[in-house]
Length: 112
Image (tube, one colour):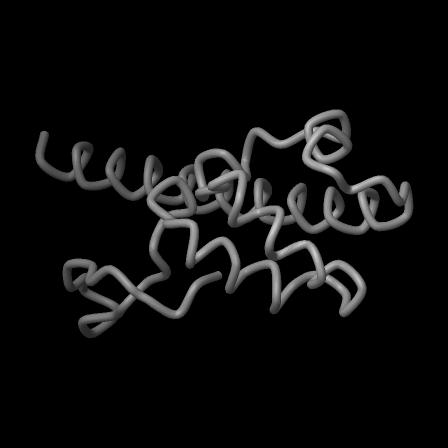
């Protein structure tokens, strides 16, 4: 995830914690940082393509093999590597959203 964090409210079990900024709020710069950290050195060469195509976090979550190819990433192995990391990021995002929904459901249930 990206360094920038969003504060979350205190719970009974934890003190004030910072959590990663949600992917759908990532800027192009955040996405480029993610690409450098999570993709192989070979794939880091595509930063310019991601920047030129203004790939934000919201766009990153929607990328497919075809869209990577249209962006100019012609090497199939590089596309596979990038897509693998995107899928991992989607899963992390989905898990965070499910946890948030469960937390909100628990708060709601405790208020009744």
